[in-house]
Image (cartoon, rainbow, N blue to C red; front, top):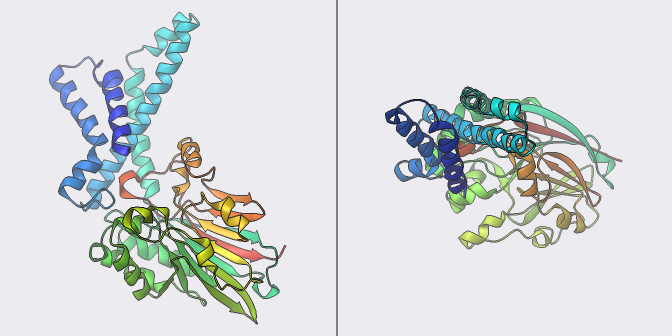
Length: 374
């Protein structure tokens, strides 16, 4: 789907920007091919180096491709806006406006702006995330857990773009917040266990008195699911696959449950099952659910979950585009939501998939959540 959309937008850019340029065909032709190759770069790279989920090419090349692809999407949007306004000006018979919109410098200037924003967006996308701290009130929270600090990491996407050095900085930032518990809500790495061994090993240095609990995201399935589960556990994580665990303090209990990702259906693996995850749980203990995707929040709230922690959306990547991502995720894209009396928190995530590694106005984050009694 991404390639189809990219090709359609690329053809539009060639038609409205490249072909009208007053330069020889020998220049316009290669420029047009360059635009089309950017639209298809995911498949081109996957054909020769890795997969679409995990391109195995140098970081510098990934940065260039990501910047170019982001610029392509942005310039297509800019051109669509300009052409939309041009159409309206013609319908309203506003010749001065129409003539200004047909100016020879306007569209190339839009392309220049898109190139700058593409580069800036990728630099923001690969920056080390900054801490974000919120308080969440939970009905029925035992007094012993008032002030309990849960650190959420999600969408780390360790890869050839976000390498071991970057992951180590994320771990350092996380440990500096001194949480009571660390939870990781999926998409820890892109690629095979062997390819990412040097990139994820510092995750084993995450520190919290009650340990590190993780669930799967969709990207774990694109690599080697069973091997990744073993690798995460070898790093000292407790991985929840439609299961739960308990955290205790002064005799009080908090249930942490975790479900799998819906993409499991494509691999013959267990689908998300909250009922199974909560089987045998203390009915009096508040439930915190780790669910990579936020879309099932209403159904989860109906089963008694008090706090759901999710990621997956990356906050929508770019202001404006975030509204499209929101619609594709049940109306949730970033931040806190009240869903049927349950608090849903959707983190923007720490990292990004290398295939679309840009952020504009949607910063990455490490989230420290302090639990409070109402």
